[in-house]
Length: 360
Image (cartoon, rainbow, N blue to C red; front, side, top):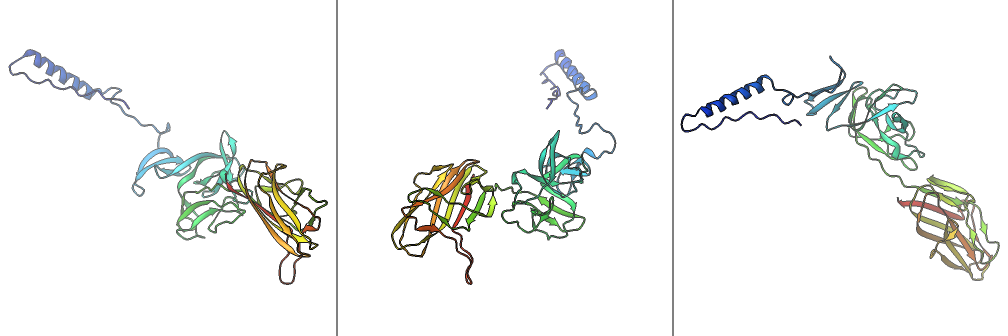
């Protein structure tokens, strides 16, 4: 910031007449008068927000008495309340208009950051969520979208004041006041301030969670051992839930797409076909290699009976790693047996395996 030249100080008068004192006073008056009539570049101040003249729709400042802050016109009818709203400059290259109040997400870069309508489905990446359109954006338009602050003049008639709005998992660009559930993405986006069909108002303040991956799998097939003391992979043939964890090839492999710390759980239904004692072993493999200290052992001597065996293990995995559950026994008179549904109970898989990311 420029420093102004100080107004010259008048010298302290002497006790007796002194011509040199009057010469100094005259000089001081001369400098003061010069500064007042010709302040020069150091005294001039100028604030230029736009190179256009006249009544333009962007680059003007005014005081907002309602919000008690400065308004800046941003173009396209957008007015930013300084200190209370945060925008991002983006481009709409979707081929269609993006209306005011649309939930948008990152779609790429085309000179500017590009956005498109965001849908919070099970296949969505929550980290690509951006914000809410704060004006009607024609295709090809470049302008601000709201990251934090108020979005006005939208239809909020379906909601009540105070409702929390989430990114919709079924309609791209839309809100829902019903909290989505897994495997859909859950992103609280805004709160309703005014419920109205045309003058609705919301407060955008998104909470973007870091989603954790998971998968739930089972086998409806009975699995046997071809030989004693022989490591055999347990396979699955049914996917109940999957978000970032998938069945690989062969079907014993459960593959993770994201690096993290995972919990592996298995419920295994062991059946015996003889009354002799049989020692059965279950353990974990990672990328084809046995994981140390993961074996569970059980002895079964029940003829035509069932024993449920559980396995719980935690393990660190990198993106693309896979885990498998193996088993072996000192007898082939055991199997992992699936049961059909009965009149009083649903079917029982021979194996149920879940893989849950518990930390990134």
